[in-house]
Length: 338
Image 1 (spheres, helix red, strand yellow):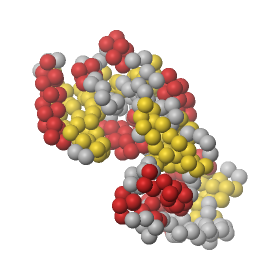
Image 2 (image 1 turned 180 degrees about the vertical axis):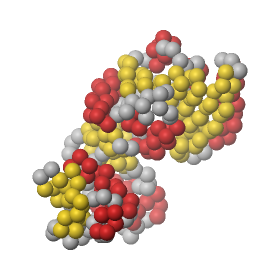
Image 3 (image 1 turned 135 degrees about the horizontal axis):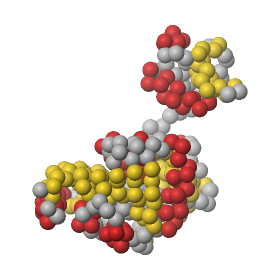
Image 4 (image 1 turned 60 degrees about the vertical axis):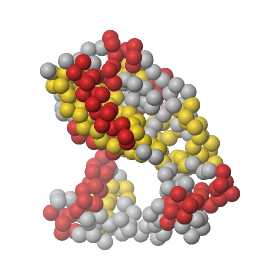
């Protein structure tokens, strides 16, 4: 049996490369030996061509377990189709699963917990989702299984985020959006992010691009976690992040302009004029819009650009469903001086 030997600090990168080449043996466990990690491989010749050091070693098989694709596949024979519709949208944040269980399924709660643990065996907490409350749109949660906590470390897009769901707002479903924006950003840009939260947008962008980011956040709990998240990711960041504590509507008028503004605007807040005045080249503005008003909203943005003496190209992207016929959208706005 063969394995490649790589330095510990290079193990994750090497593993990704082996998987990409299709030669990583996922049925066996890696092993640590001194400063090296031994990763099992299926094709020695290809591993050598890639420049890896090969060692002959016995690596144990992983225990066999049934793989469940999703919660529906676990519960489809135990719940009706109508009952399953309530459970298809749930979130996993770090080692916490967040799920909504309507009163009609209260008697099936233990069955649902069992199903979640089969799909996600790493879970340590399962919490029932409540309503948003307060200025910062923090949800209420009830822990229905596992540790009595709502803090966790969440990983996405090459960064780690410390989160306390009882104190801050965080949406894991925006992972793809954050990565999309990081790919649009160019090295050397000055970027402004109001309503920055615990800094998921700022950190993902700074992870991949050499930029200067100014983030603004009012929630002091989010600010505290944001500063911890900067420190936790610092050695992996290419960009720099300055975090300002305060209300965006009071802070932004005192700031200059930026190459790019990213506004993950809270629901119910109209900040378009404020952030548009701060954007020199690009603005990404998030809002919640009924499908019948999307064209109207696009024209509203164009008119506001004209009021600032700017010419804008606007592309509306539907990011996610919010409720029937209402979408969370991102207006990608390219700005030219008139």
